[in-house]
Image (cartoon, rainbow, N blue to C red; front, side):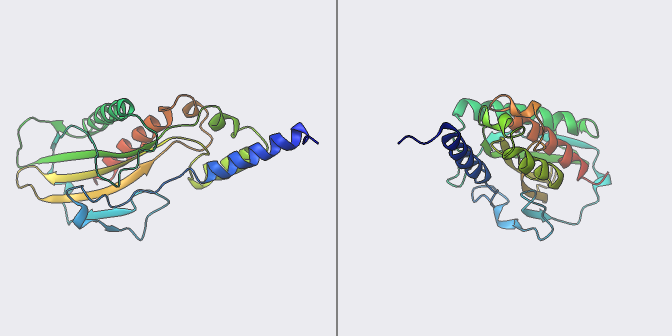
Length: 221
């Protein structure tokens, strides 16, 4: 005897919801990042944001300019790219480079040679998750996923089947090479952001936008 179609549909949806809840990964203190030995668990971390950090005593007001290393794709064994292709990694790294430079230029002068007031910024793309086509949008509207995503949107959680981006940020004094600040982070859109659910990398790029803004805001000026 064949099971009724509604039963099959409900079973499939239940399986998808469970899979969506398990979709998330957390950043690690990536071993091949130069500052990895300095990173420590952040007791004040909220969700997957800045889980590992390092900070020295810095007068950020002493810095008026910056240099930006090109964003590179992390190749360590603990990278977290899932099904993201090499072409997509390159696309995200290029987009990340542009967004961080754009945000930094709102506060600092971009220079090509180090000065005594220059920060050197290094951002490494360490992971990304693609948005799952259809399911990401569908679970914002259906009776099973909608309430879950609504709660996540209020608590800062990841949307079901939504993409994300993970990365490491290192900030050096450009003149001395001293490490001033470092952290690993993960960013993603609000769980009810419909626009970000279209396209495999749209959510990751939205996460990059948020990460760049958050980084500049953390520099204490």
